[in-house]
Amino acid sequence: MVLKQMEDISTKALRSSQISYGELMKCAMEARKNSYSPYSGFKVGAALLCRDGKIYTGCNIENAAYSPTNCAERTAFFKAISEGQREFLAIAVAGGREELEPCYPCGVCRQVMAEFCDVEQFEIVCGTSANDLEVFRLKELLPKNFG
Image 1 (cartoon, rainbow, N blue to C red):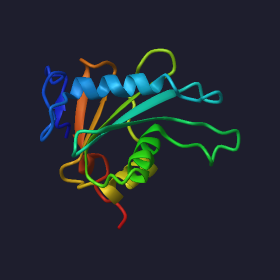
Image 2: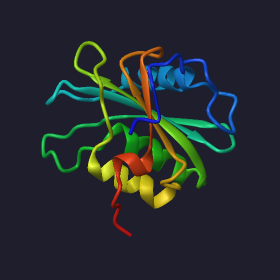
Image 3: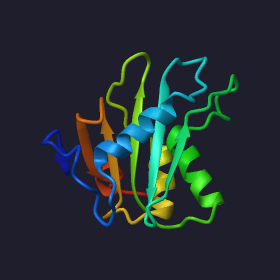
């Protein structure tokens, strides 16, 4: 079940925050520009909103050996966690080769989110622009998390 989908939510503010879903997606789109993805050509950016309003961004970073590759979502989480953050409201994910296309967190990223977020409340914003968005609760995308 999609929480909110393409019903002009781009200007709606996230709960407990002054930032809108569309603004958070714009941050993810900007972070995508830093992607290092010479093998897949699939560039991903993420923007993680903390409870205090700070946003941490990340991009995917590929490696020829593949397993050292890091997704944009985990890059953003690890940056925030390494800076002492532990309370998160939402993450926006923007991905695609040339143009943006629907891009959802992988299973490993979803599990990392579950480690640090309330699965009932944490929101995941996906879309193809700042105006074309879907918003899910983590529990919808990871109904049976480990732990």
